[in-house]
Length: 128
Ligand code: FES
Image (cartoon, rainbow, N blue to C red; front, top):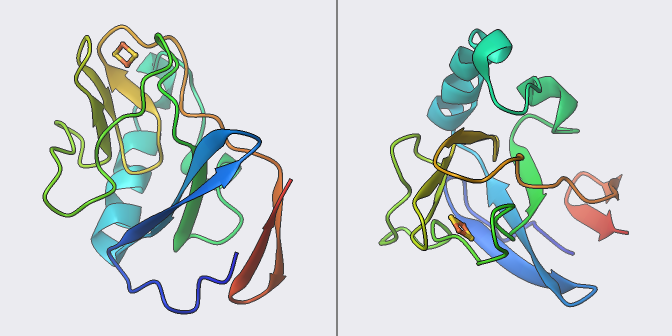
């Protein structure tokens, strides 16, 4: 996936093995929010540090499938409701994910999955 044309603060969706993969070019604020949540790691439902979920701070790559019942959460478009934690919100039963894709509130049991991927160059990501 060539991400060179994805501006800071926006996201794209690519299909991988039949599932949407969300790639977000995070703003400094979004990165700071994720680091703030790191401080609550002990109380997270699926405790993970932001650093364990990204390869480069500015890029978050997650499978866009809610870990509750498999809906695709909203939050990819600027006009979407991103939930209480500024990440993604799944309206089916109200799961809120943070800017690192971690489950913060609602019924989903796990964070949005980080798929296997690698940076082939600064702006080229290979998923899988
Ligand atoms: Fe996301 Fe139910 S599938 S809250």
